Length: 299
Ligand SMILES: Nc1ncnc2c1ncn2[C@@H]1O[C@H](COP(=O)(O)OP(=O)(O)OP(=O)(O)O)[C@@H](O)[C@H]1O
Ligand SMILES: [Mg+2]
Image (cartoon, rainbow, N blue to C red; front, side, top):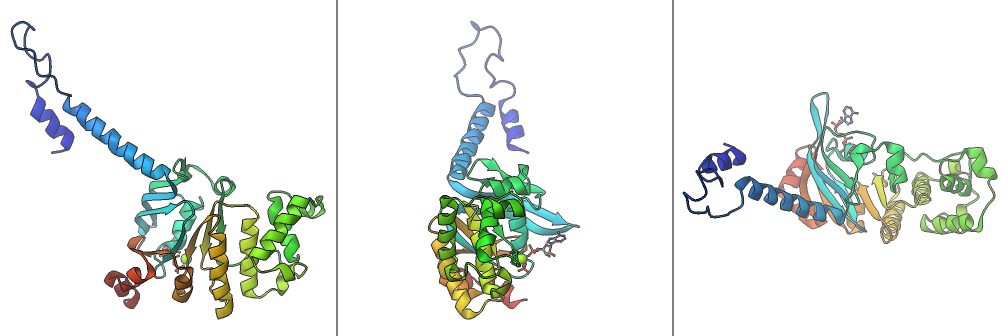
């Protein structure tokens, strides 16, 4: 029996006020809230508590599922990222890490569940361009820079947002734009390469340039999928430092398989498996979790 049906049975009919005969024939009934009202009040309180907890968060996923041809790629995923937090996401191949990013950025629509940005904005109701313009930047695994343009022009293009390439390049260079470009070049370790063609950068430097292009849009939340795949050890170490600097002023979610890199980030880790959270905490906690050990060893 449901809670509502149970409440109805317990109170029908004698417990209902005014259910008995004339008012002068019976003592006044003890006034207590109708059980439905009590139940509704409890539900409202629970929702309000949930709502206020959600409002404090930057990113809030709850009970998210996504099925592809009957296969549950995301299965009851709940994840909360606080304002200003950097989080590392690990998990075996196929765990749903990229699909999770697809859902946050509006590339994929979940079947069920809640996805909120800054506690209030329901991301499932927005498309990719709209979500990007809200301040969620996403870096895919493969760098997508303009190879035949200089580093500086790539950043100028990114700063200009929706302007056409030609328009962006002939656009009058404001002092504010120049200062912003200098700042980003320094953050992504490319100041000395500003006039170099993007095509001539190493793989790692292209990744940094693309991070710089995202910074040009000033995102509040940066999603980065496997940033150090294919990087040299030195580039990997530098990328950890770079992301830690970026995370001082914005939130970052980093998906990565490289555990040395994750350790260097020094942040809370979430391990996904079969589309939901398997373990969460410090890297030591997660990597010593027997369930995590099992899914990694069982591959
Ligand atoms: N568009 C799609 N159509 C069908 N299946 C998909 C689609 N996108 C993802 N999947 C499936 O969903 C599962 C999760 O994939 P996802 O790419 O999110 O994993 P991942 O954790 O990012 O893995 P990896 O570490 O290999 O990048 C996989 O089994 C994948 O084949
Ligand atoms: Mg992936």
